[in-house]
Length: 233
Image (cartoon, rainbow, N blue to C red; front, side, top):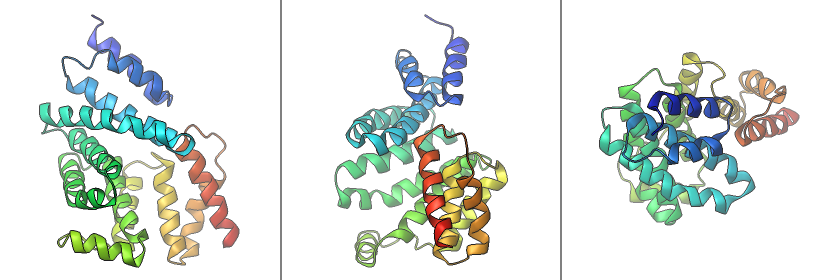
């Protein structure tokens, strides 16, 4: 059996280079017996691979979700005291519920947010968990009126966020580690744009529009959408 440190080193190189499919192939070989260091990296790689494929091959992306949920569930089982366990469980819980239809996805929202908040409590210096909370709020804000009626009918105690709630989380993520995830900057720019606060939106959108190295589908989408919004300002 390969040395754990060697496996982790190779996986981390793949992840840093956004070679998530290669990381998945490697880490799947060593997922049993379940070990925290292997499983969180596998959950991470499955998540980013799913995001990459979603724009180009939605069905292929959706086929990864059951595996991601299985891995993140095992991760939570063996390491409930670790922030990534709750982070990836929240992600794949929501994605798996979405495969079962809108009602199941709506019913999962409180549980998803609970695990995101637990992840933040366990590691408040992880910018990505702040992004997840901000993105969660932004998605609620984006719902149509009739969709919000259904969401809050089925979730009586679900938070009703404001744009400031979403911005607080997304800006906190940037404060912790600037440029860690271009999609985070896109959401900041988008919220400001939607609020017609164009002077605040412009710096984030310009940074994205001027990107030259695009390594993921998230990067490409962030740049494309930023360019569209700038054209309207």
